[in-house]
Length: 296
Length: 318
Image (cartoon, rainbow over all chains, first blue to last red; front, side):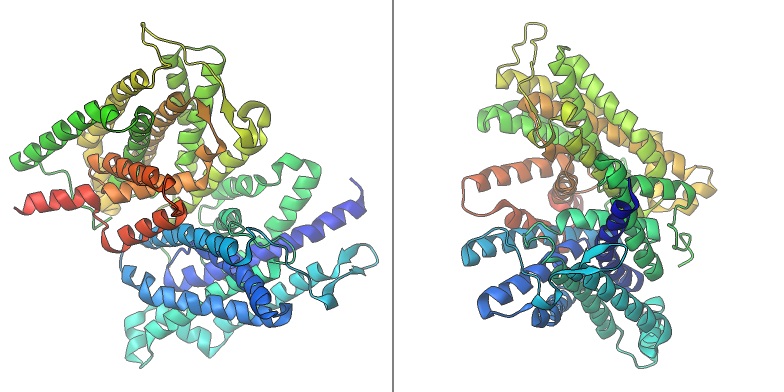
């Protein structure tokens, strides 16, 4: 394989990796803080894409306003779900959260399918790339679509900001305190449940954002999050459940490795991530960046 | 799982209730092909055993596998392959079950060292690996098209082209599988398994090795899931890619929850209810995903003991 092709694969891998990173970042925030394994994350990613599409169809809203609005809508929806449904399961095994969100996934996918069919008369639709970002950039060593570079850059910025807020700011300190010791935090006059709802909203908002970003690359369809979420779970296992750094680094790394692997031996494209997971589990059961079980 | 009712106590009342369940459900299964069409009845047996197998791990070991389709699916394919190559039905079923067991060795080894949610995600990811293999290895699995048109040679004068005959043959297989599950749960091994579930540290301190118990439980569960999968292939005469899909793994969880976890009969009852519901839905205009999703949500939120769990709790209180 020549270098040119390899570089293109690396860049394509970075684009896929950006989506893995954004999604597993949201999962990490939600699990790290709330101990919820949000199976619905893929469906919420799809809702982000669908909302952007629906806003465009119904109100002629373009990509940029959708990029802001759709994650907000998904985030608010997430907060409503957390308040009304998920909060009923706190104190039980985290498995029940997984089961509840699994049921919600089935529900959401089919609901969106019905809405797409009845309102827009399509079951899958392309989403146009914003004009500024059409075309390609010549990086000297490789020519690459502008929009994809934009996705990689924006994802990096968002991951950095999220990491910074949680690890370095007062807001992050409050969130960490709320989740590590809710009763003491409450004693300081902090409304823990509000913070929990907020964190969940931000986490799923990230999934919504990933969805809008994905819409121009992959087309919008009700099951677009279904396979992706499983791969993302594997990424999360490799990186270490709940580790923010782990999810971002692993997300990009898995994207690149899978793309390069696929160029060398195509059938392995989809399975490589799971093979990687098996190897990592053999060596480090708690994931590359995860703390050993029982220390949290 | 702290909310799951214990089944270990052995007083007379428990025994009477158990006998009533066995007789009642046994009779129902005997006349089932007269009540609903035989292929659906056979589906209930296959999925019922699958759910019982899953519950051996979930209800009795506290391990929520989200990848049991791997065993069900691999056995379904392997059974089809053996039937297509002219093997007799029992050999094909045994072969399918064995394939599930072989597959389970590495998966169980890697996953039982983790607990809780981690375990769920790992099993899910492994199942997905199996799914992609089934999708891409088209020469053997038929890829998206699946496998069809294989023989079901008759056995001891039983004509397997008749769906009622197939049903009763599978009822015998189901009874065998259920008996294995029953013996497992009631055996000293089963008791220890539940002790590990309820308090791993305590079980370890009295000399049990939790990882070994979980591994064994995983293997039994995977083997029975394999047996169920082979039954499914035998019943339908076709295998589609769906057998290895993650939704299949989710579906068996739902059946078990709906029927009642850690109740032995519950999962089979749940499987029956889900399949009957789905059968009703195919003739209505309601989309299946919306209804099943809704049922799932309601069960998890308000009805965690499931049908059999609720009834048993009610009988016990009287």
